[in-house]
Length: 457
Length: 175
Image (cartoon, rainbow over all chains, first blue to last red):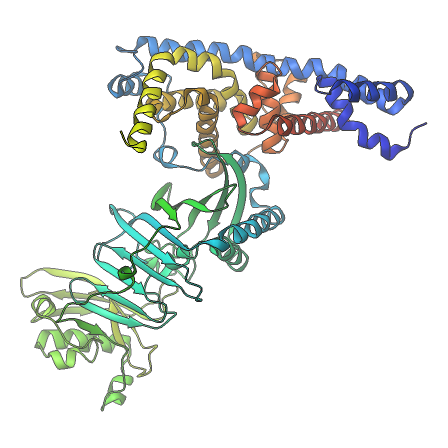
């Protein structure tokens, strides 16, 4: 009589024997045991009998596949040019086929190959945390020797607007990011798109809105919103796991084979828009303010981030809004990249400070602020304008744009998303006769406690 | 030629040779059943799997030039198939929930065979793919290892565990 635990340990060997995948000495040994053990003999016999049905199941797929193969090739045959080389012929196949169906936009763009998501444990938190923690541990180790990273990405946005802004219907705008891990907590980094650039020299950050607006930031001021964590490639996963825990987003880890033949780890994060969207003005205007799917691909061996794709779920559509197209590690970065040369006539955006008559402005609410701001524009009173527009000067372009406008209406302020300030609906008529209806963003979370215009002009 | 240029030239030669040697017929005939099997094991639906199989080959034809190494055709096709199964899942998730059982279809065999397919679909992904490719590949671990890009020993380990789990699921189903 054999010990039950020992028999339990032999189950795999018996299965391998049935499959013919056991080497001779081990096979002989297990056969001897089967002869003397009733339980193991029973398992062996059941598996052997079952094997016929299992093979038949796959034979059925094989048979059915033959018919399908005939169909696919017949469709190819029907096309005017069945050579395997030209896209034109393939286009004809694509468009002319009766049975071949179109591939969705998303399918064409998607990089994720995570067949496991078909399983119902997609939302299984337990699996998520354990698996992701394993990758995280390995990933942190792998990136401990990182000296630098260079990332190329493209984002659907406006070239000169906030780095955090996304616009679902806009074209992609190229972005470049550099970071040097110099041993300091923040390191040196630079993020750039055609209309804006931010550099951090390790001590403070500097933003340039081309051609001549600039702002200074502290060591933690990023100006770049959601993009900054991407530069901390050693913390990307950690930050996503924490976010998943805090925001209840769903995180899934899968393994896949990359097109380059290497094993990949794919972390998919299904996240919900953060904030109150009773008024949906800010919905889908940034990645955190959208329901989105973020798909990170890491090299399984090096654990280094290779790609990221962010899809915003907008109605029935999934729109790719951000895509990392290239990541290079330990590249030499020209040190001058972490400094900015500013134009001589630079205009500085500054934190509002207390005015001599600060009390008057402190008492204004969002609506009154919008009214007073546009009135200053209408009157071309640029000193008054600067009390709501926290900059060192007003440039001629701004004066030409806003000067002499006519206020048509100012609406009731509202909140949206997680924006700390208010949005004030307005309608104005420019000197040119052009009418603009939009929402002015104002906020007063500053030392002077007065509302200033933060955007929306 | 510099080393890079020389590599580029070699790569062009390989691609050109792949274009000459690989035909649609070869691609479809040699890998059709593996693609269909993988789709069935992932989507749990015969009809949709057949549609996806067609889409996989359509995309393979259009993206043929991105296949740098023709010896990796199967692994490449399976990658496309997995991606398409994801899209299938996404579409389906928004329409109606996925059922646990594979709906029967006469051309895929009798009730017993359908039970096997259903049990296979319950296996973890890595196991499901290994066992599917093993049986569709003439029970050859070496071929499966190449397709999945893992070692032969890893395939054997997955296969044995998958087969044992399959047995347990079938027993469960019977009881």
